[in-house]
Image 1 (tube, helix red, strand yellow):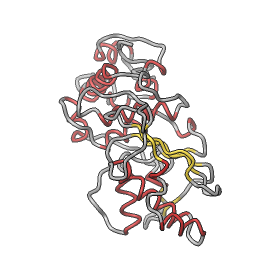
Image 2 (cartoon, one colour; image 1 turned 180 degrees about the vertical axis):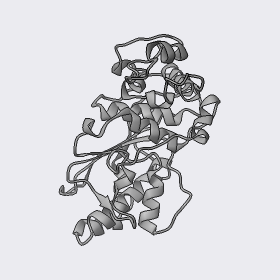
Image 3 (cartoon, helix red, strand yellow; image 1 turned 135 degrees about the vertical axis):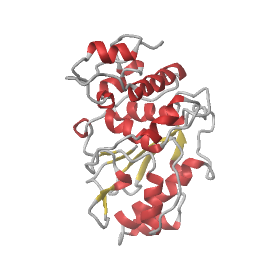
Image 4 (cartoon, one colour; image 1 turned 30 degrees about the vertical axis):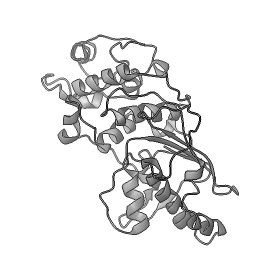
Length: 283
């Protein structure tokens, strides 16, 4: 997640403008989740950045966001490498939530740089982000993009280019929920970003592994419902902000049927409305 305080940034692209970091809510793309993106949900597999982007785009509307808030793609590291170096790379951004508060007009551009890594416990005596860590491999290209494309001709450009780790020096690990396995990084990052975008503080106890496991199971169930009858459109279209948010205690006050299939078929036989809640999960 990228948050800034001036007008939105645009990077040029041959077929038209592209929002910074391929902003999920401002370049008018309706993302899709194909079978290859959905398949890993059924096992102990890492999820693709394409699926994380799809879920995040379904979780909010552009009108829900402040004008000064930008939400980068889960694979925006590829964007920065491609734009900065003018070459396509196979780089993949690790599924770690990041919040960057910056102001191009300020003498010190980067105000707050927070990293929420569900594999690293925050609140330690030293929360500084190590210079060789995966998050810094994202922060450096982000700073380079800001310098070259947003501050060209400005003395601040040379300052940032002279010290590629300027942004990393500000980075700290924030407290966040910890995963109990090695493959739910994407959904934990998704949960952290969703809370940040809704103005909720992220801490270690806002949700837990049980909530994420139930979220993963229910999303897979929605994606794999096929025999719904001719009067029920594609169940994937039922995914909504209220559905995705309802798995997180701070964002839901509603409970629903334990069986997502019965819920889809009985409560929404005509699919006239979005799903309003998700199956109950433990606090």
